[in-house]
Length: 250
Image (cartoon, rainbow, N blue to C red; front, side, top):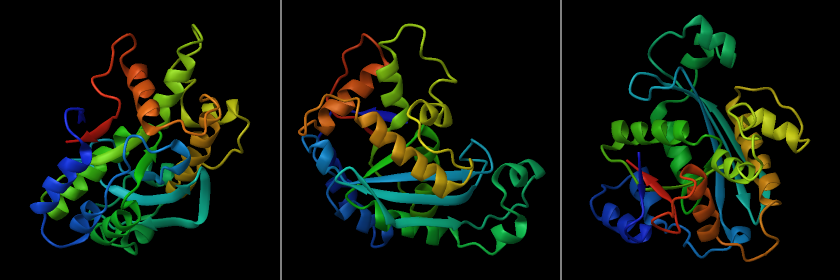
């Protein structure tokens, strides 16, 4: 995965659109991305979580998908969707114990193609939000590559990056454990949900994002530009980012 800094992402989106055949991916690319000067309060967001059989998108499979929209810094519970996804191999016992999804449930689920079509439709014109978004983005890209033969540009907000950036000002406070999703939620006294359910994890990330946002400067016009600039510094402390806006693609 590469951080793309050198061009306007909507310019690149239009270029990809011209070479993408009709279908769900083309419809997704036809919708403009939010501009970098969009205020955070106005940014349309989709919190997403995948439950998978492992962490290697080339070897492992998406087991379930869950997402919920955030509009004007409010979680739209009516937009929540959850689906179990069919995959060919039988599940390993560890998968069943972790995700509580059985082979019978998996075999009765929707196809990956139907799941991605649902996701792309709801992701149009929105920014993907996840905690440790590397997992979601890599499985998203691999699914697009396999289904459509093309990997799209994708705007991403990662609550892990925001948490690291906020905690790095407290010496000794940041650790791998302190920035895990459930530990961050405890810090903000957010309710505890069962882990490893795609919809509940997406909702958990959405709630955490809103809680983290309250620690941002109390400026109603805080922009995506500023959010991305500070998140980029969290990943490379002391290094000036090459751009104000972080867009990820393969």
